[in-house]
Image (cartoon, rainbow, N blue to C red; front, side):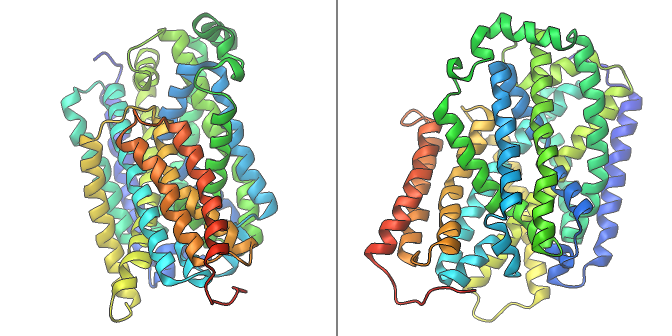
Length: 481
């Protein structure tokens, strides 16, 4: 496999991995309580919050799937970039859901459901969120490993080893330092990601003959369908509605994101975090999409759209520069893993395991179990990444997997916060029934397509909540927390 990756590039990569590990491990000294381990003692301020949230959401898998979308569809894919940013900004502007969650001083999203409904609802929400997290992050490793194999010019047989090395480093510092390690490494990695974006954009546009070249590439390959959503075969009104629902629920209920909200010093700071971060969230989608179209201009059509961006980079980047940019991509990858591992291990312990312990767990026991959970999660994710094969594009697989829990959780949150008659039976119905369509699609994609499954999930959840709450109300008094 041809690439310009040279010894100087390997030095950049190895040095970055060592520095990241050292920063993360040193942060363990700041952990003295459960609040420190999960939420940096609720002391996170705006600048640090923006850096860590942006780093987490700018994963290497994000770069791959956004570039894949634009490479395969043209400029119409940019509609997704606008949706991701506008939904986050709107939530920050209005305080939709997140203000209530921050005011309750909880540590996980499912914890809210025990306060509003009952402990069993919390347990079900924890299980669904955990399953969604594992299925989502499982494909990250596979996609990112293939990207790095191509850009480094390694044989495909090294893919399991590359995936393993990435996970071992991230697991080590996340287990030791918790959220402190996540924040400190994310801030460092945010700088590397930003530099990588600048270099990648410059070289991509130069070799694609600028904006004129990428416009011509889309016109030649897709015609009007590359510019007009209503003519694009994989887009259209239903897909856009699904994405709006997905991102609205994700920004307001997805634990890796909401964990930043819960870590901020107050609700007003949380809102400011979302409004400012939405700017970066737009470019986090738009820039890889432009790179994907540049790859179309430079390479033409390739067999696997996921490989278009790394194949272009191996052709256009000189030695030294390619290693530096690879460091930026590794930063994007690791900043996502550490946050996701911590978030879902916290849900596993706080909302699932702890509910079935005869005696209350101490803070030290909870931290120990979370560290074990991070390790177990890492092993499972590694095995999933090695063996699972998806038939969907990466973006649509992730949105589909997210719909397993997103629809039920956002419905139960909105119902609980804004509708006094929302009740436990309705929430049970919303959680269970809304999870069925995406699960069926993942198991048997020939029976229902991803758009239909996702929209059906978001439609069924509120219907079930309202019907179940009205038909079988409990005697529990209205929540007024």
